[in-house]
Length: 118
Figure (cartoon, rainbow, N blue to C red):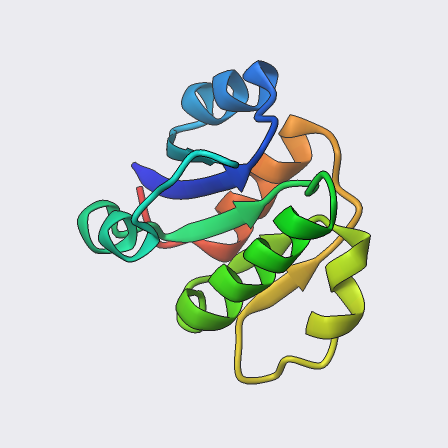
């Protein structure tokens, strides 16, 4: 089963259901709840991560810090237009940017970037 870290303030239930039905185990990290991000990465060992739409500058700043500090070796989908320009040229990272809003499209992305995992 593929493992996806889902980061955001609002996590649509439809997304979680679609992921589960599509063979993806999701570990949800909601803002502004406090999480030990490094510990979560170590224990969950995600195959990929998706950072959902941030609500406000504080969350955008926190997402940027988490991505910069921890996501260098993990395929990461960034949905926030506020972060697209920052990561458009991030060649040292496996960052994907896009205006994906449908859970089906996020599931397809996970299967695309993690094809060898079952």
